[in-house]
Picture 1: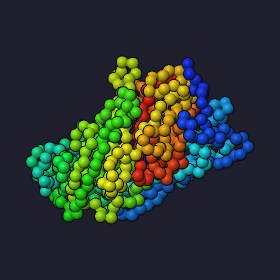
Picture 2: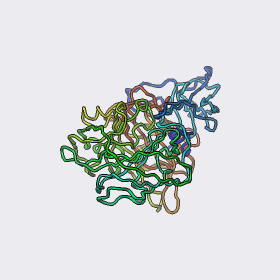
Picture 3: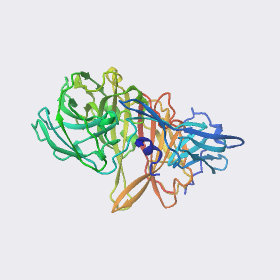
Picture 4: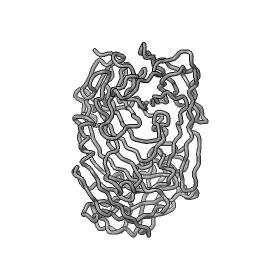
Length: 503
């Protein structure tokens, strides 16, 4: 079943003492009220439930199916605020997409689904999601595609190729993994070859189900104000049916779509860069870019509704962090005119982590904004929400490296200085080494609407070294703590990276 985004989300890898200090109910900011429900109440017993409908949005029609939860580890944890102890209440997941945990006392629950924890006082959880593309079988073995085609506009340095297939929802940048790429001035492809299994959501194409293989020339251009950008220019559309592990060859002619459009932004890159040291005092700026595309309106609620191809405009003109007013950028549009145009702006940052003398691991995060494209043209593009402030492990500053935090540590933080966070997500990574290099494995992801979380049993283990990414989310009308895979526009996200800590 074609459920890459959900399986990725639900089944990911899965002298201070941790409970010393503040109770979960105490917020770092005095403006946040005490959470009386964090105390377990012994006499009121309820059932925790959840459903997992997956809606596939395809050109051939939408379809909703349950996500099979029978292999998911389901446990509800409650923490007694007077003792600091977690109590586990085992649950079950079913093939029909439901989950159930019986006999759970009232209070704030840490609902464990694989390595994901939903921290909420709720008892009914919506674990459903929306995905682009029909249900289908992934290419998990190397499945080469070779393309020969005429009709390219003379190839320029800076041009690149996007592959997409709208019905199954398969997408990818071809250039970095392809052989036989066109040389400067070429007007045809001769033996361009890439592995389809490396695409995003690589559902095997079937022409009998209406799948079309598309390859787009994204052309290097200059805006009305002299800003370089890339835009959808010409497209090769052809039928193709694949068998996993077997090569296929296609041919055809690139043509220019009749429909055109324009896009212009006032991009306040300096506003993103101003938050760099809030991500971490040692954070390094890496990239800044804007994407603009179009999607079926139903995909506004998808987990990755603005995830890449098919792009109409891609803007990452230089490595500077100065503000840009682009002026008009033109593009050709092969996508349905009724689709919703959407845009993403992101600034990337990294921090390095090293165990001993091992080569450091570089962790990448970003500050991003997702909106309808019209919002990007109507107002300056700047962060909707900033990073959290003053992160702590227990009661100690989290930007420093810490030891002795205990296996039952807490993380807490203050509100962002910019915007309003509607939810927070905390990712916990365990560091290791392999072949002389430091590695990082995500061991837990916690969703909450509070400014603190306690780490449930077995997240931190004696002898391990960890770091955390704390994400602030702005997503009005949607709770990530009860509906982790639901999205809405507009939305913003910003990350903080802690130092290393160990029990």
